[in-house]
Image (cartoon, rainbow, N blue to C red; front, side, top):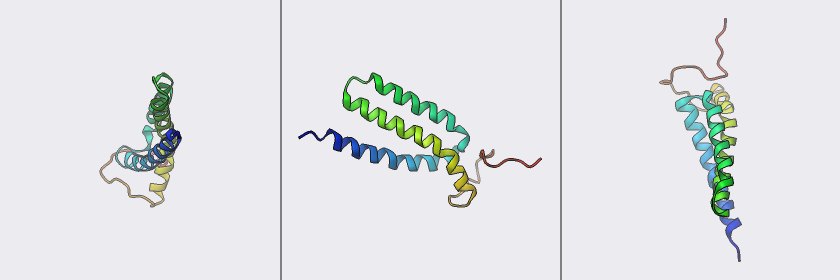
Length: 104
């Protein structure tokens, strides 16, 4: 019996669950404006999975990279959820979120 697929599915669920948490924390502490850097990091992880020596390591790095890419696309949405009051705003962070534009 080959359980690799089952183990990888549990890892995928773990990576997605952790993704929810780090998106919330990253937006809280740094803001959503860093989403492009996070996207590049996720793409590099995904590309790095092509060079892993084993199937399992390649799958784990690829799944994690895909989760990071998805989280990067969620950062601007998280900023909108903060603006709507669904999540707390960090009072100590300077600067604006992308959705908060100054009125001229």
